Image 1 (cartoon, rainbow, N blue to C red):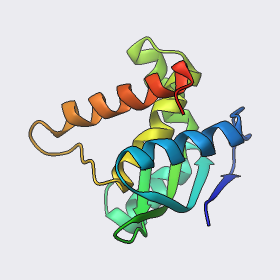
Image 2: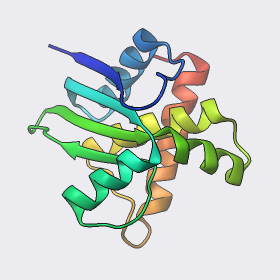
Image 3: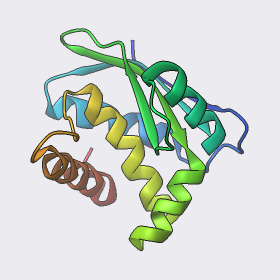
Image 4: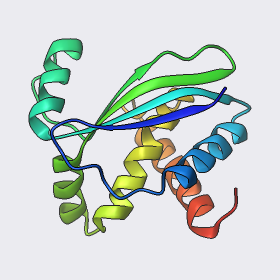
Length: 143
């Protein structure tokens, strides 16, 4: 059973079409031959994501998303903490709209659950290509 949950902790829930996001995420996972189990998006502020980063990853810095992967071989599942503060500052820095950056990060977490990494040599470019492909699916309504 597919379940996509949206929670807000210390921030106002962003304006996302939840049903559209669910359909989009399922379509992207399907391109990778995977199904979707339970995905939980926890929208938060910088203080919360820093706390999560310190507690669970032992990192002392802000980030836009932290993904906890509970996937099995064929079904993706996980919790994704997304800092709306960092989304806003990254959007400004990169010359993107807030909504576009939010959508990019929403699918970024899913791509991590699908096995796409972005920390090693050449991996950032692969991740960005997959993000762009997923975003074009969304914007073109191809799902």
